[in-house]
Length: 351
Ligand SMILES: [Zn+2]
Image (tube, rainbow, N blue to C red; front, side, top):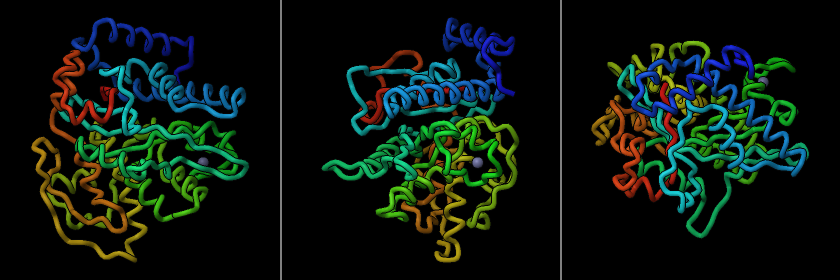
């Protein structure tokens, strides 16, 4: 159910949000934040972004990613808590924010480096600015390297306009004119590794790339707080996975692990369609990062630019990275250079 402005549900969310903000991070009330509340907040955020984008499209012929992101954070507050630690610095790599999902119930967290991109329409053709480059190379490759330096996956937050704007561009599971996934897709998420693969697959055809990217993305609200529990995920490397990693794929996941699994599913599906063309690499490797929930992972990648298990699961950690605690407490001078050189903003969400 979507909380509407002015309804009791909406008022109570706003009230609890104010209390959370007033009481600061130390408040135990944040443990009351459930997935349902988070989902409602993200639905409100997406609806606000759709309205803002519609307005600027009418007035200006386009909308800005920055405006859309601001509306999303504002409307979904306090579930998206932006912490800006260096106002002077523009993200040098164009990486917009580092997003950490903190799961206190399970003492885990999941991080991803996010960059906002617009789905642009030109007549009946579509475009997402994946091909932007400067003298250092493709922006999307620099973005992936920045995420890798932070040991988290990279993801694009796609502002796709409302369903009317996307007339002629159906979602991957499109069913009818009143298609529910299409209605939720105004703010969607796509793994950057998937985007890199699609960009190269559709080399020179920006329209085909943009359509595929949209169709392989997921509505943000489904990624972060799905309405239904997930089921078993079939992956071509399932046979290589043992113990807890096999349970991660085969059993429903919640909280931070669920977000990781949703993003992983995008890449697993892309690897699955290459299965007949690319044989598996039967090999496991153990990552060095010490707090990983799943440190030993298949290295297989098919035609994807990097191993996809590692890409996503490097971001799923036991506990919370120290720099998040420092950022939340305003100890910005303690933030590591590898972080401050890439982004000037973290967004924290308690799931
Ligand atoms: Zn649809």
